[in-house]
Length: 228
Image 1 (cartoon, rainbow, N blue to C red):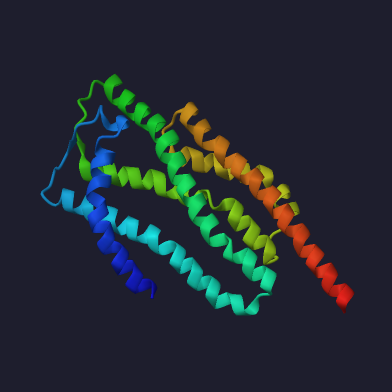
Image 2 (cartoon, rainbow, N blue to C red):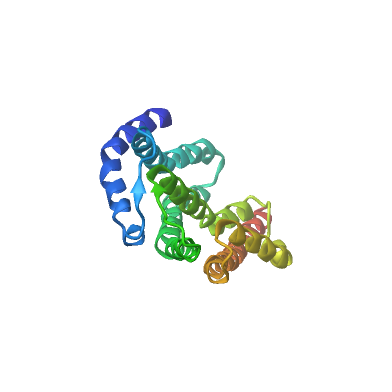
C-alpha cells in the first residue's frame, strides 16, 4: 500500500515541483546568486529530486500509520490512543525542523558563504543543481533532529531510556551537539550558536518529556501490581 501511495505521491509531486522550485529560486536569500544550469540534465535532476522528496514527505504519515497498525494489537487501549498521536506530532515536528533550517539557519549560512566569496574577490556563478543539493542537505537533517523529543518519549515508554540516563549523559550530549552544529554550519561562531541553542533546547525538552513518560510508565506498573 505504501509503495502504491508513494507512486501516486510522486506523480503529484511532478505537478507540485515546478511552482516550488520557482518559489525557491526567487526567495529573498537567492537574490544575490546567479543560478545556472551547467549541464542539460541539471533542471531535470532538480525537478525529479524535488518530486521524490515531496513523495517521501507525503508517504511518511502513511508509513507510520501502518507501523502503528502492526504493533497496535499488542497494546492496551490507552497505549493505542497515545501512540496514534505520534503520527501527526511526527509530521508537525518534521515540518518545524524544515521551517527553522530554511527561515533561520539558511540565511546565516548564505550570508557567510556569499560574504566569504566577496572577501576573496571571487565572482560567484552557482549551479542550480548544486544549490538545491546544498539546500536539501542543510534542511532535511533538521527535520529529523526536531523529532528528538518524540523519540525520547517513545524510547522511555519502551523502557530503553530514562530521564535519569538523559541527565547523566547531558554534558556528553552537549559535546556531541556542538560537533553536529560545527559540521552542518560554516566556521562561524554566530551560525554555530544559531544551531547549537535550539539543539540544546530540544535536548532539554526531551528530558522533560522523558520524565513525564517515565512517571506514567511507573504509575501504570503500580496499578498493575495493585490489581495482582
